[in-house]
Every structure is written in structure tokens, then in C-alpha cells.
Amino acid sequence: MKVLITYNSIHRGNTEKIAKAMASAIDAELIKYDEVDEYSILDYDLIGFGSGIYYGKPNKELIEFIDRLPDVKKRKAFVFTTSGNENPKYSSALEEEVSKHGFDVIGKFSCKAFDVWGPLKLIGGINKGRPNSDDLEKAEIFVKGVIKEISDL
Image (cartoon, rainbow, N blue to C red; front, side, top):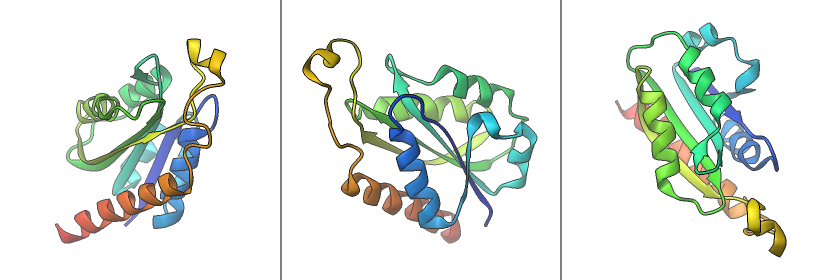
């Protein structure tokens, strides 16, 4: 199975840490979204889309990238997000965007991450040291589960 994990990670590298852990766990190709040729998406059996959360939403540029992708029919995908409060609705928002473009989203993952947005900067941020080794392990378990689910279909 050919797997691509593409992501956006701007400020602290939180999403990139999760993306790298996932890619390593399943031997997937890992490419930042702005380095992916949109039509090469068609070469993969499974695509993971990851984003940090900014002002309560997935990264705007990643969403624009997803909007430029060619139409796909039932191509399998999963989504993952990192944020200060690990709100599952953030991954649901990314799932919705990916699904609108014909992807069959078969899993979503959210992870707490170090955050110094707005007033949090005054107290040195929240979730220092996150994602940590436990978070990375959970990401690996998640993505291995996605692979197993596809294999069982």
C-alpha cells in the first residue's frame, strides 16, 4: 500500500512531530503540503492530512491546497491536528474539508500541543513539552489502526 502523509506545521513543529511519528510507524512518504504536486495524490492508496490549529481552524493554506486537488472518488484518507486544547471538533473541521473533495476519511486524530497564542504568551504558554513521547506513541497506534482497518476491508 502506498501512503502519503502531508501536513502543515508553522510555529513550533508540533504537527510535524506527529506527522513524522506516523510516517515512520507505517513507512509512509512524508511531504509538506506546499511541496506536493496536487496530481501526484492520485498515486497513493491512502493520504493523511495534518494541520496545526490557528484561531480555532485548520491552516488556511492547507485548506487551499486541498481545494486545488483533483477530484477523487472514494480515495481513503485520515486527518490529524495539533492544538492547545485538543478539541476533537478541530479534526472534524479538517475531516469535513477533505471529505468535500471526494475522500473517504476513515480516521481522525487530535493531539494537545505546546501553545503560546495570545494571552497564553504572558504565562509562558500551555502544554509545554507536548507532543511528548506518549502523544507520539498514540499517533503511531492510531495510524497503524488505520492501516489495519484498510487491510481488513
